[in-house]
Each structure stands twice: as C-alpha cells, then as structure tokens.
Image (cartoon, rainbow, N blue to C red):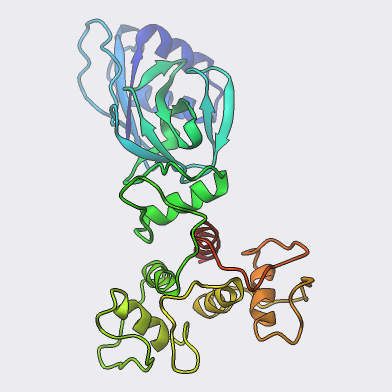
Length: 316
C-alpha cells in the first residue's frame, strides 16, 4: 500500500489533464465522486492503492498547508521489484538508467519523494547500482542484496526463491553463485519449493544416508517420490552434475513440463545417453537454453540451479 499526498494545485491540474481511462484518471475520478467537497478547496488528498483498489486514507481534509510526503517504506527497509516494469531512474521523473527484472531486491535509502504525481524511492540494488524507482513497482520483502551476484537473471531468480524461503545465503552477505551445488542442498531446495512432505511410515532405503545428516528428511522425501537416488544410494555430499539435474527436475516437475515434441540436439549429448530424454524435456520447456553444448558432466553451480529452479517453478 502506498500513500500519495497531493497538493491541490498539482492534484486538480493532473485530474483535469489525465487521459480518460488511465489509472491516474480513475484515481482522481474516484476521489471526486466520494469527497463531499469541491476539489479546489482541498489543500491535499491522501489516497491509497491496495491490489488495484483505490481507497481514501481519510474522510476529513483540513484546510491547511500540504504536509510532507509520507509512505509505507522508510530508509533502510528491504523490498523488491514486484512488477515487470521496474525502471531505475537517475532522479525522480528523470532519465531511465536500466530496467530491473521482477523480484530484483532493493534497499530503500530515503523516504519517498513526490514528483509529477508519482512517488519515488531512492534505492540501492545489486552490482553497486543505485537510483530512483517508482513506488508502485516496489513491495516490501525479506530479501538480501548479495554482494557477489551480478547477473540480472540470477539476481531475479535468487530474489524469487528467497521470497519463497527456498534458499538463503551465507552469513558474510554472499550467495556464492559459482560454487558447485551438492546433491543434499539440491534436495533441500526442491522439497521446499515443491512443498513436499514425508510419509511418516516411509523408511529410507539408501544405505549412504543416516539420521545424523542435516538433510535426512529432505533426502528421504525425494527418494520416497522417486525424484533422486539410484542403486540404493543418494550420494548426498557429491556435487550434482548437469545431467543429474536434468533427471531430477524432469521427475520433480513431470506434471508441469510439456512433453518434448521434437528433438533438441546438443553436440555433447548422445541419443543413447541415459539422460538424453530428460535434457530434451528441459530444452522443450525452455528451462535450459538451446546452445550447441549442454555440458552434461559438469557440476551445477548454485547460481545455475537457482535459475533452473525458478524457471521450473514459474510454469506451475
């Protein structure tokens, strides 16, 4: 919810000039219809928007000077871009510097500023970027700007998974996106994202996992659902390879992924490979980008898996 105080000079002028059918015009028309006063008499009007519903903050508007703009968010609050139109400006109402993907974390550095009928927040974002973003594109959330993530799409994917409490970073403020992902950590992330629960009667069959393992329950759940494991072992401490990831995701999202309608050919994936069909399914659903090489035997990094997982979750 964002509170938008308007001075009468700016408010009345914008109302009369706003294009009919636009969001701004609907806000002004709503206020005009509900307020039992001539708009010219009002020195300021406070309105709010919540899930597309416009409401007046107050029923009484005293005849006094316009107050300083106030808003829901204040300095040092965490937030994220929650629309597909987040633009970072060099100043309120100024030049657009870059577009921010949905779920990009931001740190609000000042109270909101009013410019041309819009509220702007000064924010810090990833990779040392800072600027101003319109209030309607920000929502509060428990997200972290990790110091070592610099790719836009990875930043967005990690932000999305943070909000769903699927992942978390390290105590030093890093995410370590290039670090190989272990199979047990992949199990934790998948179980959390899919919200899977363990059948209390199920007994783990894998011989290489004991109850002292921190991720015992998550590993047991993936074995129970036949998502991870082969030959009576789960190999929890081993890094997850890219072909293993394809198999795990294809099983986990079998009800979400479309069946492959045509073959996607990678130069390093043979048709006789056990993972060929799973990799083909990932390519069909645009979970992986179709390049010449898939690199099936390389280890999956934490950043890569966040991307694959977010793309998969978005199909649900």
